[in-house]
Image (cartoon, rainbow, N blue to C red; front, side, top):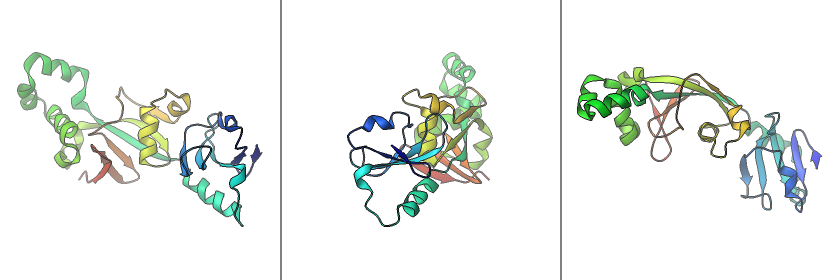
Amino acid sequence: MTIFKKAVQFDAENVAQLKDLQVGNWVLGDSPLKGIWCGFDAKTAEPIVAWRDDMLRMENPTTFFNDQLARCKLVKFELYQNEGMSRENSEFINRYGLDNAFERIPAIKSAWDARHKGSKSFKPRNFTHWVLVADIRATDIEDAFYQQNNPYGLQSCEDRLTRYASQWSMSVGDIVKQGNTYHMCDNVGWTRIEIS
């Protein structure tokens, strides 16, 4: 394996050379036998581009791989979840019923609507019911979703989160902020929302 400006060339017959790399994104192709991978070193969280040794057929590979590494830059995403889904509110619903909960605790109604209707139900005035539960270092919003949900229980995913409160896996109705932009997780994809 050859290190190339934080990029890795691996032998097509020894895919195991990628075992120390965290799950990432295939830039070209969809597997070690077909493509170019953009991800992170599982130990150092440094961005890495990996490519098969017989794929390097370009005149200026430095420019290409530097461009791919730039795509791997980590940025901060803030995750907000609705406090209406708290354990205490769930107990209130179980005790007094959903209709009473909607009337007595506005956060429950906004959480319910967001979970079932996504961004179509969101009203900026209700943003006060969402609380910051985590910061996530990720390449983009889809990567933030993957890191927080951590489907394989990877420590490297956990290392990219700073948790501030109890939380659940990112899902419909959750809000992610990057810079000054807010997006709500919908049934399919993300929708940009305004909070004021």
